[in-house]
Length: 93
Length: 93
DNA sequence: GGGTGATATCAACATAGTTCGATGAAAGCA
DNA sequence: TGCTTTCATCGAACTATGTTGATATCACCC
Image 1 (cartoon, rainbow over the protein chains, first blue to last red):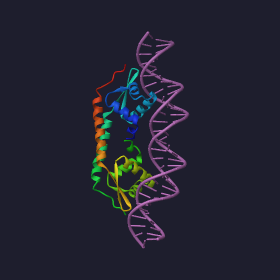
Image 2 (image 1 turned 90 degrees about the vertical axis):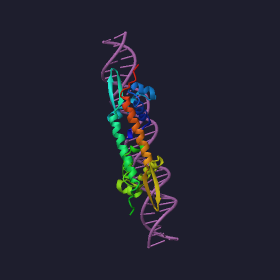
Image 3 (image 1 turned 45 degrees about the horizontal axis):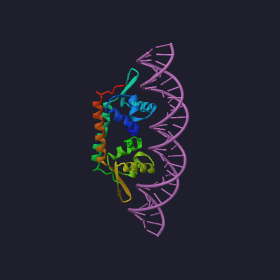
Image 4 (image 1 turned 60 degrees about the horizontal axis):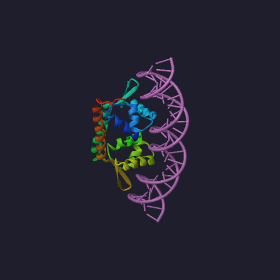
């Protein structure tokens, strides 16, 4: 979850949620350096949130909806549990 | 979202999702120092994810389900959008 | 083949975040 | 009142993470 913490990484995810893009698009849209974008894409890739598709000399990136779904379910469960926890209080010695 | 990135903070949230607890419980359960726990609770409090309820010399903490719900909805929307984005690709000049 | 553009990787630096010990304030109890 | 416990806050040290420029690789086009 920490992946979405960085502002630039969040922006990248937001952009990729709209359409598939190649690295150069992300560089243009965010104004960040190419090496920086490439680094974040690697992190997102290794975490399983995006996939890279080499297309000639460009590389297209897209989000993996399944990974996001998993995250959604996890947070939804946590939220539901938090609701129930409102009625429970561990006594202090 | 970056709040849930730190392992200890995630653990605190996970514990609070089960029941309301005071600071000393969290110290016991996590093994972290009291000042560290207190710091994380402050961050979570300022971000609106927990509320503190002073109870004598103890202070009980509980998650705020509404804040978590908001987060859930946000990620769910992102996920839905990512699904749609699979069909869209921005052309490369 | 030589040149150009797109991307990945690396090491070095800068910044932000976490952890810790010490200290102080407030509540409870003798 | 004096002692103890709980918790918040502060500054310092440490750790993790993001950013950058340089470099390497690969595909494309002439």
